[in-house]
Every structure is written in C-alpha cells, then in structure tokens.
Length: 310
Ligand code: SAH
Ligand code: SF4
Image: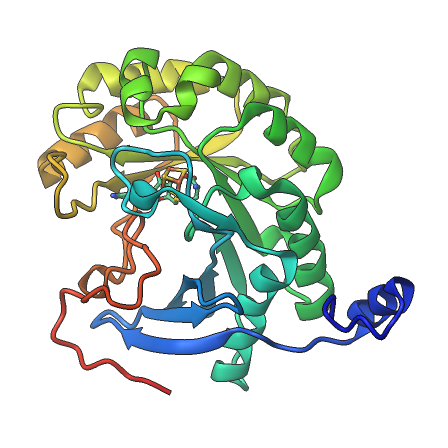
C-alpha cells in the first residue's frame, strides 16, 4: 500500500487499516514426517524468510519470523550465522499468518509464536504494530501469542506498555554470566541479573506466566549446579521452564546432552516446584526445528521427503 504514491499518505493509511494486499510468495513447502510444515516465503526484494506450522490435536501453531537473519550471534543458533540482513515490515510479519490461513482454509492458525528467524525486540516498532494487526485481523487471542526474546532488557520493559498483552518467553540458556556471555553475546550488554529484574518487574496478567527457554548443551549449561542456580534465579517469578535439548547443526562443536541428563536436570527443577517441560523440537528432518531456520532457498534439507512446490 505504501508504494501507491498516487494516494495521499493519509488515504494510504486509512486504506491499509481496512484493506490488505498479500505480497508474500510461497516459494517452497516442506512437510516433516511428524506433520510439521515449513514454508519458505519470498519477499518483494527477493529476500526469503521461513515460517513453521506445527499441527497438534486441537491447535495449529505458527512460528513466525521477525527479521531476515539475526544480529545477535548466539553460538548455538543457525539463524544468526549469517548476521542480520534486514528487519521485516509489520505487514510482512502479519502476512505470514494470513498466507498460511489462506493455504489451510477452512482451518485457521490458532496460536502464534515469534520464535522463527530474528530477534523480535530488535525490530520493536514493526513487531508491536504487527501484533496489533494480527489480533485485529485474525481474531487470534492475545493469550495465544508468545514473543520470545534473547533478552533486550529495555525493550522488555517497553513492551508491556506498547504491545497488546501477549505472552513473554525469555531465552535464558545459562545460569552464570560467564557461560551466557560465551553462548549469547547480548549478555555482555544485558547480564542475567538485569534480565531477571526486568522479568520480575514485567506486569503479568493474572493466570499468565513467563516462559524461560533453556537450550540444554552437554557440558556447558546442563550440570546439577546449573539446575539449582536456575531454581534460585527464578524464585518468586510466576514462570515455567521449557528445556530444549540442543538441535546440533553442521559446523558447530556443541552437543546435546543424553536423555538421562535432560531428565535429571528436569527433576531438580520440578523437585523445587519449578514447572519444567522438555520440548523436543518438531520438524528436525526438514530443518524446521528451533535454531535451524535460515531462510535460504538453496539450502538442502536433510530429509528424503520430496519438496512440494506450489
Ligand atoms: N530470537 C528469539 C526468538 C527466535 S529463537 C530468541 O532467541 O528468543 C527461538 C528459540 O530457539 C530460542 O529460545 C533459542 O534459544 C532456541 N534455539 C536456537 N538455536 C537452537 C538450537 N540449535 N537448538 C535448540 N534450540 C535453539
Ligand atoms: Fe537470534 Fe534468537 Fe538465534 Fe539468538 S537464538 S541468534 S537471538 S534467532
């Protein structure tokens, strides 16, 4: 709409409030053996992004991207490897949901997680605007939307006043600054205590909880001491923990822990009344799992599944 320069800005704004022209091109759809489906979307400037649809019993959860690439450089994540290409515009974020709704009609996306490519709070204004539009265009409830951040502290604080009250997830991934500095460079700017303080001050609605995501990496952040430190860090915060065993990828020396190690870590948390789930990422055979999105067209999936083009 912004490009139709024959219209005044005012009129363009009014029209974009009520009308919508879809622009994402579906370049590829890949379906995983577990039912997860990955969409590769082409943008107007030929950049590409990915969204992942995870069908479950009574919900369709869509994991959407907020940036092309990511500048945060987390050591365990494939999205960050090539750095940031650009921020997505609000409509490009919304359009991922509308496109999938169209492709799945009459079914509709029921839940949204901003856990695809990019750091949503590094693209704050466009993400906030997209959240408002998603709620108003699709009718998806605010409580069914979750934004995940690597921990941009001032933006977490700003989010509460600006965005619809969606759910917040924090990628914590370590319990000491020494380890988190190494895994997530953002920690050098916003260390763990500052991040936890922002979470404590986050105005949680009743019946809501903050999700802490914790990617378990063998020998790095998975010791019993880590589990006990995690319990102490989270004390007094209404929260739950999602333990995600690392999805390893080529060229990375990081390993996932054993199943026994993951269960032992979880047990320490639950024994101390911290709710903790183990999240095995879906769609690993098509590189659709957490931290595996890269958004490249030439990328070859590690599965034998035939690609379905439309
Ligand atoms: N940038 C945001 C959202 C996208 S990343 C953030 O970091 O929160 C979504 C989740 O995937 C994060 O919790 C991140 O810790 C996790 N993740 C990244 N790489 C991963 C990997 N290799 N294995 C498992 N989880 C990973
Ligand atoms: Fe970016 Fe999130 Fe990946 Fe870190 S984990 S590089 S913040 S997408």
